[in-house]
Amino acid sequence: MNQDPRVTITPTEPPPIRKAPPAAVLRWIRLGWEDLRRAGWPSLLHGLILSIASLVVVEVAVLFWPLLPGAVSGFLFIGPILSTGLFALSKRLELGERPRTKDAVDAWRRGSRCLFRLGLLLVLVATLWVGITKLVFHFFVDAEIERPLDFLRYVVLQGNDTFVEWTVLAGLVIALVFSVTVVSVPLLVDRDVSAKLALVTSLRTVSENPITMFGWALFLLLATTLSIATLMLGFLILYPLMGHASWHAYRELVDAGGLPPR
Image (tube, rainbow, N blue to C red; front, side):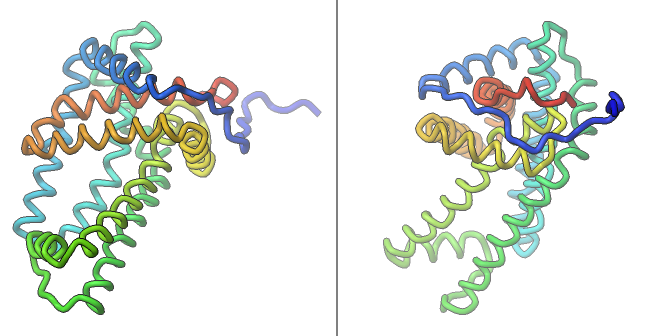
């Protein structure tokens, strides 16, 4: 019996993963900068939004410390959706078309649907991280932790072991989030796949390109650190750059041609 051509079959097997040398990181950054320069205001709008959102999170941390976990969780939920606009702009440029703000807004609307489960996963990770931290400090730490500075003071001043342990734990959480999102978000924007398949593809990409992905993660970390050090103003340029470059990383690493377009 012939299959109805209007019926879309959701793929279950991850797409092939390509290998990329560590030098590819510099190429992605260069291509990302070209996209940022050519897209102009629609791209910079993303940096402006993230800068304002980051300042709000900092304000919450300073004035309303108990609300910080909720603010961070919401930030992790919205972050991937915001990045879909940058991927849409890069895709338009890739097709030889002029990117518009409307393209980004449309991508945000679509992203709120296709990235819903991934956003919930990130919120869950953030919630678990905050919950574990609270339990550890409640049962094992004999100190008053009422503000962010109290936490930093305790971690830094209680000896090298404590500082190293918290650094390693935070690094593991960051590595987990990076591994499941590095190509899953642009893949969900570009192709009609399930969140599970996108996560598996992202993990496979990292496992098959460990050195290159380490270099890419290092660039993202340095760009984020620089943005924070400039009182979030660095996000105005660096966030769009990271987003556009991430699109080119996805396009080079994932052979998604056999997957149905979104």
